Image (cartoon, rainbow, N blue to C red; front, side):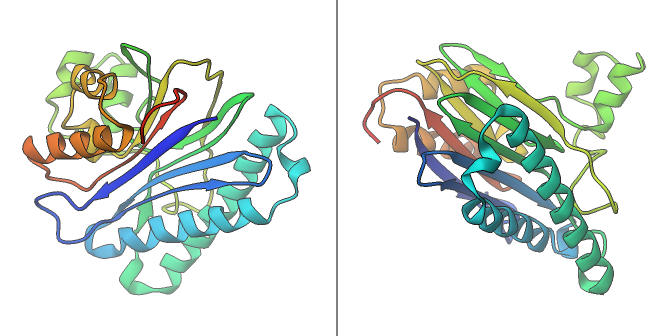
Amino acid sequence: MFQYVIETDTGKKREINEDRVAVLKRPEGLLLVLVADGMGGHNAGDVASEMTVNSLSTLFLEERAEAFSSIESKKEWLSEHIQNVNKEVYEYAGNNPACKGMGTTLIAALIDDAGCVMCHIGDSRAYVIDGTVEQLTRDHSYVNVLIDSGEISEEEAEDHPKKNWIVKALGTEPGIEGEFLHFPLAPPLYLLICSDGLSNKVTKEDIAAIVCSPMPLSKKGEELVKLANHLGGEDNISFVLLSSLVEEV
């Protein structure tokens, strides 16, 4: 089963941390990994991310084991409860003027020996690392819409002035449809689920160099945060790094 380390850091430029991260474990061993990057600045992005993580955490721990008996049932569980939490966040924002317009990205991953079932909304990312780094998620972003329409290239997207504009977030509309992934987690490998405060600053090559080093797992987490802050730290930096290897934590 996976060992893991959780890191969340305000960064060097922000006054508050709008990211929320959690790993929950059920008695039968199933993990729920949550990474939510709140958006809205003064419009309470931290409220949106905290509501999302707290609600999904409670629902997960209180659920019957039968709800997670298959890949399809796991996907159904994620879909149903993410839609319900989206409605809660949207209605809360509508009823509280200070929270108007708030929302959050979300990656919610159910992990056990059968593999990973993941729901992805926004521009937080998931990577598999086994010597090299493979990005599993595709940002729900304005520049990716432009790439898909042929208006810009992937190279042009890297420096686009609207690179960080996302086109899908939890809580900003009455309904939401996440993007689902299912994949095996055959060891040896690492799974990194992170907010864009890490992925926007640290290259895949640097991620691989740190994660595949002989350092203890906790030290790898510290080094990723340190590097993102060294390279500017303009945003909150949060992630869960999971390892299928037996190593020093």
